[in-house]
Length: 313
Length: 232
Ligand SMILES: Nc1ncnc2c1ncn2[C@@H]1O[C@H](COP(=O)(O)OP(=O)(O)O)[C@@H](O)[C@H]1O
Ligand SMILES: [Mg+2]
Image (cartoon, rainbow over all chains, first blue to last red; front, top):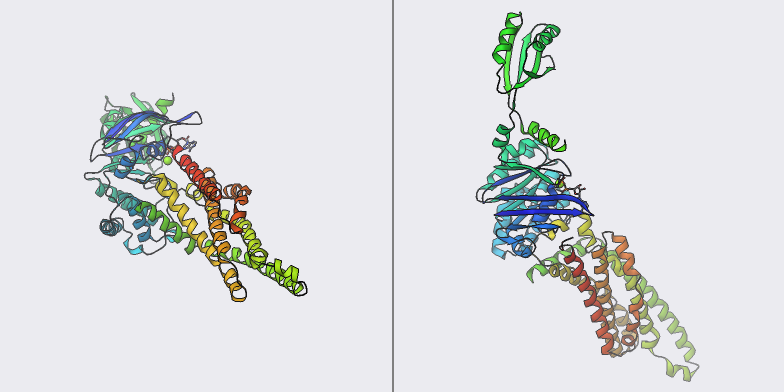
């Protein structure tokens, strides 16, 4: 559905996107993950025919973004990062206007306008001026206009940025409902979002693709070490001494004490050597009370930091 | 076509829902009214003198004495006022970020340009229509000639067309509304072709000049919009 080949974009000689290649199948949710300034927005603007690429090509539903720009634009719904709408129009009036621009006939327009307002939860503010809406509502109107023509491809640039936690959950829910047969490309700089929503993730930094995989694969590929926490009853000093006497640990980090007389550590060890039993036995033999031991899955966040720092080395 | 109409209607609604169309119209009519009053008072004075002087009385013409200079003044006021209407046309879309969505809809640049152009032209035509009040007032007491009146309005409309197309162009190259406005304001040379119209002479050359002028700037604007899509 989306094929991007060696796409690059320079601004005044400086690369914002460099040699990016990826593709997305029909029905897939593809996550674009990267820190601010990574080139996510620029890539999306190229895909939506707002900016021309400096080199490389992209096709959406078989149409080239430069040669068949209108055909591409008929098939996409785009929500920009900073949703700017016409503040002097009402929600319903605005969506009707967008429907006309998207070339929808009057009957389809009035039906779809009602549907997307329901779907995006803006029906109750349909007669309010957009300029008077809260940020969360405006974001929804932004999604509503993208959905209006029932596009095959949805491109959402940081759809949850600037929303409160409740709104974030609602928008994520909505995106998941929307997927179905649609192809969705969404960008974010928040890690849990991609593992929650996406089938595939592209990690991008400084305009370059660092990896391109499923969230599960990324997680297992980078789980080179095992991380767990241990909670003990006893003194902090002797416990630290005991742990430092055990070989094969990559790091031991004291955490905040959960209560008086109790201590907690975050321990990282090599994956091939499971030291949990050994530590538990040693702790008990040395007179500590073992209160808890639990493993931590390496989060995408850790992987992300690891990848970005590896790249920089 | 229906996409152009959608833009046209939205722009027109913007003008009349916001305060700017009314402010511009009021300023325009006030200044024009001031000139009309002065011209008429002066003409009145001359007429009084003409009662003693039959030779002078023959020379007096309400068209040449009042209407012709009035339309000359109106043309200058237009140059001052129309940039207020055109300066935001495209620059605001870019500045506020609404351009990002607008240009990702399946519409052509011409839909946007002509929609906005025609909407501004409509507002301008309404403004010009209001100035008909002055010749109508005159008509109650004197007998202004219909021919020069009609040709003057044709000339003013053509001048407005040219001027608005240029304003649209400057608005397409500058994100800054003020710069777009000032650039538009700076072009006075197009007034020369108005003279014949106010004298009641419709010369094809003048019409062609204004039509070409408008088309040229509309074309330039479309190039500017299109160049945003060229590889850089
Ligand atoms: N219109 C522009 N002109 C110049 N530089 C730009 C422009 N847009 C983006 N950039 C630069 O390109 C880089 C990538 O930006 P962007 O795509 O917005 O990143 P992201 O969306 O991942 O935060 C940044 O360094 C940014 O400063
Ligand atoms: Mg961005």
